[in-house]
Image (cartoon, rainbow, N blue to C red; front, side, top):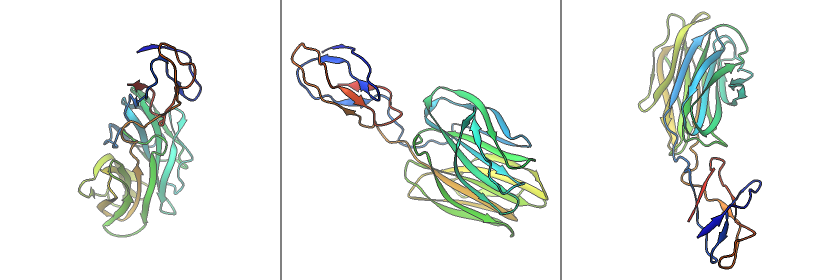
Length: 283
């Protein structure tokens, strides 16, 4: 089979002109999308008065998504914005206690590519000490990466825990932030079996001590994210990270017919069926 390049086509890929007998073209995407969201490939935790987490390193990967949790022990108002290298992140979910504290989760699809580094900046509503937790997951849907799950707020109590059921699916990954307050010391927190902690930050907050922990768990039809603690108050926020489409999304291609040893002049325009597909193999 002889092939010669013709020209590009807007919003699609134009296959090289072909000199061949009329035949069926089978197309396979060269870069297969992931079938499952992976555990975090990178993470960083900060519990200081700074509202920026600097020089956060994103490793090379496929269908990556940056997840940032921003917690404010001095205001029930969520941040007005979170950015990575100046790019706005997308708000997913939040919970507050109605008076002094809030936790919110933000995501940013980063696609497939090499390693990168940048600053995470959070526009908190108040000053003082803040918790910022960042992590990167591979194999995440790039168009609709996350769906908010249930939240919980308990303002007073003894040994307060939380158990929330998150709608998910096999291949997805569930994520949460568990925020505790104890007047005498940082609370002891314990996740249920299967939950793997990611970010962990604790320290003095107004009138007591805060302890913030994020975690993840493999997706299933319903996933329970559960914590026990000796705290007096808690906030709990969950979300589900959706897996990128499994396998190679099938593209569409326009037909073309030509005589033997005559280059085609029309058709053979390939339109990808996924934003992550950049090359095709023709057999």
